[in-house]
Amino acid sequence: MLTIDQAQDRSSLMRRFMQEPLFVEFADCCLRIVEPPEKE
Image (cartoon, rainbow, N blue to C red):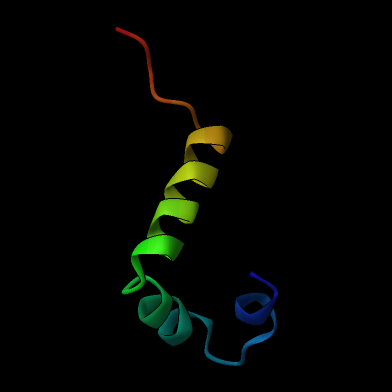
C-alpha cells in the first residue's frame, strides 16, 4: 500500500497489482470493512 501511495503513476501501478490474486483478495477485504454489504 505504501508503494502505491508513493508512486508517481498510481493508476498504472494499481492496474498491475490488481492482476495479483492475493492483492485483489486483500483489497476486497479492506473494501468490505470500509463499506459493508447491505443486508436484505
